[in-house]
Image (cartoon, rainbow, N blue to C red; front, side, top):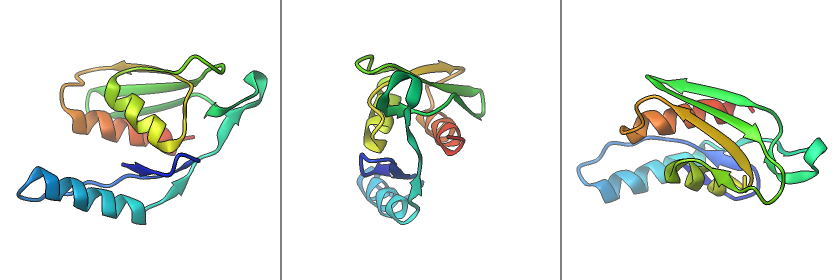
Length: 117
């Protein structure tokens, strides 16, 4: 996943012989697949949160993103915290269910939830 910190992000996967090359290839592909999400939730007057609740699923992993007031931060697994901060979301309530040991399922479920924003 790649993001600019202002509501634009891209998600891609790549398979290479070494982890470093795979990460580099995925990041370059992700920068070519930019999508924009709307940030801000008027009742909380917070421009750094999601606008509405979003749900995503992949395999057994389910992710729910909810708006949060300013100062709450991102409460969730470190991988999700990193992904949301890359996009520019600083305050968000996150709920994750299922077998999250496979990071790829968590990343795909997160991308599915973000697409629905």
